Structures are given as structure tokens and as C-alpha cells.
Length: 106
Image (tube, helix red, strand yellow):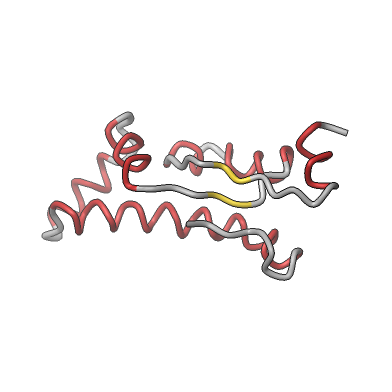
């Protein structure tokens, strides 16, 4: 048994303190959930700022949202909420299997 599964077996919840569009697009987060027993995810504006600035994966969404009139904070939070919703969808089976104890995204 791998160490993270051992933690889970003792009742310990393992949360990831990171989110990027790459983790979502490339299936990495899904693999963390499946293979490493990651049971939740937390983020904050600094994490998102670094995620957005550190890749071009957000460029087309930024361009489209800018054309739609989004700017500044509204644009930033719309991008963040999109990623958080996608992450929440991935964690839904964990949430259901644990009767809401785990599977949270914040």
C-alpha cells in the first residue's frame, strides 16, 4: 500500500493546496485523487495569480472574457471559479463516498 493510502486508511484526509488549469486539463488532479487518495483541495487568490501568470493555458479564456467585457477582479474570479468548479466535479465521488466528510474544494 502506498503511504497516502495508508494515511487514508487511518482516517487522515489529504488535501492539495494548489490548483492550475494544467492539473485539470492534463488529468493530473484526477490521478492524484485516484492514485494518491487526495481527498480535497484548497486554494487562494495568490495560488490562482501564480497559476494564471505561469502558463499560457488561460490566454484564450482571458481573451474571450475580455471581449465579453470582463476586466480586473471580475475576470480573475471568473477564471478561478471555472477551475474550482471543474475540481469540485472531480472530487464529487469522494464527497459522495464519504457522506460529505471529504471531497471539498475551497
